[in-house]
Length: 447
Image 1 (tube, rainbow, N blue to C red):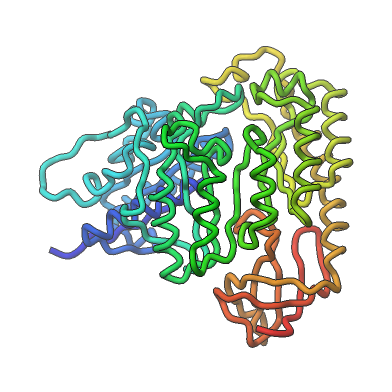
Image 2 (tube, rainbow, N blue to C red):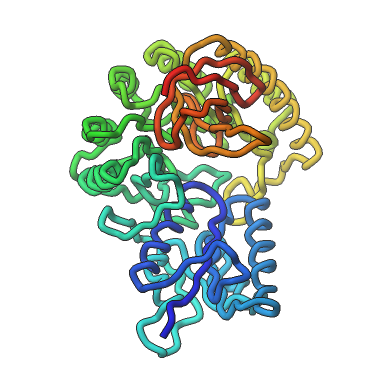
């Protein structure tokens, strides 16, 4: 019997991508053959996102698009996994008969039962339960990224109760992996050529709080920074809670922990932060930013904000705008508040109109473009170390695309390098020659 030809589409965040890579690994163990061409697949798996309205729409549109291949292509089975399946199991079963199976966020370890069952016995339509699963270093995983970089998910779920967020209901409570499991995974990756890891979780700084073995983000980092071949450790999704002075010092004194922090702040107005249930106020936020900038030289700070949260007044928005102008974040993204059923904020009556939300988002992003341009212009003439991610052919020359220590994979800008001796997966010393709002351009002088 020939191997089943399987395609997989991963939507949403990097945390979802790790789940997709684990599913690929599990299916690979069962002898599945993979294809990137959906029209050539016998079975398609769509790992969905349902965090906000836009992500739900993208997931549904993707399902409907792929379902058409049942009519025109080789497709025999469509399996939908992830957050949309977890959140809307009953609705999807009733309203989308194109879907053959639904697999929840805590059940993807059973993906082979739906894609490549050991026998011909029929399997259940759905497997969606209370999320409790956390993958381990021994779990097979097929990377979809270049081998020099990888995401490592150190915890699953979230125990916070932010009033705007549905993630705890989709992913379950916070569940931290053991330090030994994470260290073993990173060691395995580095032995295979990985030089950079992005540590990810729904809430990185809450790592270990659910465990009784004393694990903390600091103790994990002390173990990871000594691994041979690991040159960049990047910390993503650092909520301001539990971000301590000793963690700041550890980052500053560790050469291979990047001076880069992704820290979603959401807002600066204390009354809105209280309604958001963020458990931090304006004064503590401002003090933390001062401590980080004074304690970590040349730190790159990235944040995300929410505009149009229920009840946000013009005065509160202007305070947020002034906060962005004063602090000049290196990277910044703005979400318009998405009213989600099942959340505390979703039930509030004082919702802000979409028109006003869009105007507020655009105003801050216009400001941030000026800030980003100014900050990037400061790099012109500087010598910078760049990790080369890929090469592309443009007209008659090869262009290499890479990242500095201050640029995370996929969400930040890139460095464009014209140099024939650069090599994908290696570090190259460059001199920045020009800049735009988001990208840098450079000549490589050594490789």
